[in-house]
Structures are given as structure tokens and as C-alpha cells.
Image (cartoon, rainbow, N blue to C red):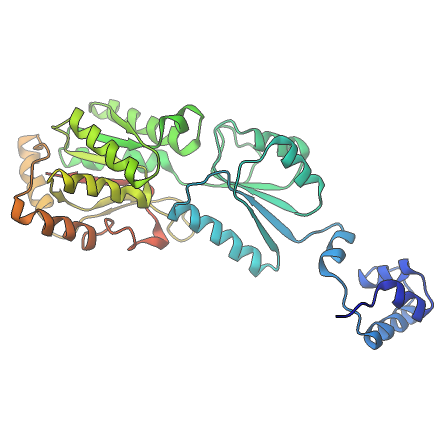
Length: 348
């Protein structure tokens, strides 16, 4: 282990410690002859400066902190976090992940500590005290998500309103007249969590515009909770013909509930996805001339869609397996790089 300090360098070179410090931090106010003499001593003694100490002395930490105040890590959230970490590494920045909620005093301490040059905020609410505090402090930050008022703030977000509106409109175009939304938890909506509010409000607006009944079921973002929510939803609305889920990869819980009830899944998926440098898009994936395509043509003429119906017992297991492994958008492992934030299911 090298125990050489800048005091040793200064004593050997016959200069002050502050002069050595200025040379190590590439300050211009040092004579060239002195700089060369100190550099020669540094090489002779094998001194290696402490990188973090240098950064702090220069007033830059070259570190980024990401605040993720949520214990539920979905594939979508994981992509954002890992992407930020890779980008920081590519730029030779240290990346810190804080995976718990912070208090005002903790956030204040982080900003004063000089341990980070900037902050990335996730899980943004329409009125978010963290955003207001950092703006007031003038501390550099960006958001994954957005508030109600985003003037002067840099952010990246999914277009939940447009994604949900297009999903409902697409299902209505297939003559579905009872389309339910499997929304995020009611607690998230009441707290003003951006995706929960924007998706539910957009669904309600689109249903009113198209003359569809508003059917909303709330669920935590776990598979078991989604199984339970799906069963309750179908108990209340046995004539339901389509659902839209806001639960990304955990939407597999919906399929499990349908399989348990002996219901068949038809059609593809409608989902919002990150697509290159486009931050939001809507994609409709229907598997060729499938049953749902042919049925939809007949239903357009009749103007109705049949309710969910039980599958034949002999084909139930085979159809359920087919839905999870072959249908585009239904296999949770198939589109990890384009993780779905809203899936539309059509069943009969």
C-alpha cells in the first residue's frame, strides 16, 4: 500500500502543500519549473492522488444520484434505472441509487454534501415536494415522469393519456362495448401519482366521448393482487368483453385469472412502449388473420360483441399456454426491451 501523502511530496520538492494541491488539480497559477519539479517527485515517490478527494477539491463529485422511492421494481422501472447507470458509467460518473423515500432533511443533506453533481427523480407526483424543493434550491435535477406544472424542468415520460385513449378507441373500433381499466392502486391515484392519474382520467374521458360505460378496477402492482382484482371485476361485470391493464409485466396475473375461470384469450395487445428516440408510441399487434379479426368483421355489421365465454375443457390448458407463449405482447419475457405499460386484452 502506498502511504505517500501530498505533505511528503511538498517536503521533498521544497514547496508548500497548497502548491502541490494546485498542481494536482491542474490550476494555472504555478510556475512551469515548479510544476515540473513537483511532477518529477510525484513519479519518483509513486504517489497516486485520491480521485474522490480531487473531485471534492475541484467542487465537482462526478457522481449522479437516482432517487427511487418505491419497493416494487417492474421491468419498466428496471430499464430506466439500469439505463441511467449505464449512461453515468459511459460518462465516467459514479452512480448512486437510493431505493427508499427521502425526507426533506435527508434531501437537504444530500444536496449540501457535495457527494453528487445532480439528481434523477423517479415516481413523480403531480404535486411533488422534491421537485419544488430542488427548484427552490437551484440544485441540478431531471425527472423520469412529470408534474402538473413542468415549466423550466427537464423530464422524460411516457404518454399515458394518448396510449390509453388509443387503446380504448381501438377496442371500441372492434365493437367492444364494455371495456374495463385495470388501473394502478386507488392510493396511488389519491396521492396524485402521475401515471395513475393520467391513465385513469384519460380512460374516463375516452369512454365518455365514445359512449362507453366507465368500469375501473384498482390493484397494487403485484401478480397476486391482479389475479384477485380480475376475479372481482368479472364477478361484477360478467358481460365484460375487454380489459386494459396499466400493470406492465405483472399483467400475467390477469391471464392466470382468466385461465382459472376457463376463459379464452383472443387477439393481440395494444401497448405504449419506448421506441428509439420516440418517448412514447402506440402499437397494435394482431397476429395475422386471427379469430378476433374475422369475428370483428362480423361484429361490426351487428354492432355488438359477445361477453366472455368459457373455453371448452379439453382446449382450456392448450389455449392458455398458447396465449402466453405465442401471442405477441402476452409473453412477459418477450418484449423486455420494450416493456409494455398498458396492455389491452380481448377475450371471448
